[in-house]
Amino acid sequence: MRYWGLEAAGETDTGKVREKNEDRFIIRSGASNDGEFCLMAIADGMGGMDDGDKASQTAVDYLSAWWNDHIPDFFTEGGICITDVAASLKAAFRGINRGIFNLGAQNNKHMGTTLTVAFMFAGRYLIMHAGDSRAYFLKRGLRPNPILLTEDQIWANEMVKRGRLTIAEASVHPDRGKLTNCLGLWEGNDDKTLEYHGELKNGDCILLCTDGFYAYAPERRWRALLNRRRGLQKIADSLIGLTMESEANDNITVALTRAVIRKGGRNP
Image (cartoon, one colour):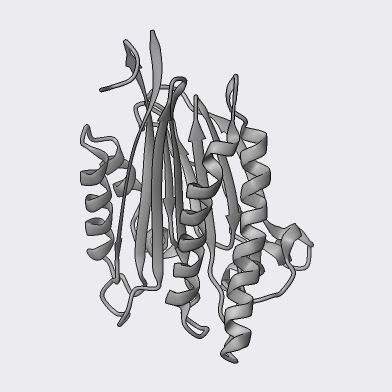
């Protein structure tokens, strides 16, 4: 008998320059007779706005409550209904956006956070995404180049898509990194949440990271770290350590999960 297992780990660090960490991450996991399931999310509070740490904390607190309240609703006779999970997470993004916006309005502040969420179950993954944090997919063995699953929702990419700037022009524009989507800054931006689906096989990995990681850690080196046969928490710690060898002038957060086929059924 084959049983779908999932390993997961994450780590975060303030970095070398920032006074406080405005990144947050959350990992929740459970198990059923059909396999293990996992929710993983990272949120990067906007440092240029007020209370970025409170915005990102609001996001992960909401997801923690969502997990406790809704996971039992997704089980059917055939296992977890991924379509129901996707619809519920999209509603959760709306709730998080509304909650952060209202919190800012009550305190006369502008607050916002990115949010990238991954849900994995029975050889499938679902990604929900707002902002410029990232989700990568790495095939079994982790040796091929990682595949970027998400789109950075930033001004430069928007201008290129509209044909107003070339890639070269956008890459040097002073506004290139401004977010075109986040949660909390605008009262209504429901249609901008991006959704991705895919399959996981034994040994495949999903990596979530904030821009404080991917902007400073050389991809060649972090890909090599992921290729080592280590536990995921040691890999997560090593990814943070690698980033700290650079300028590391932003908060750094990574979270990763790996699919594992467990023969003989569920672990005790």
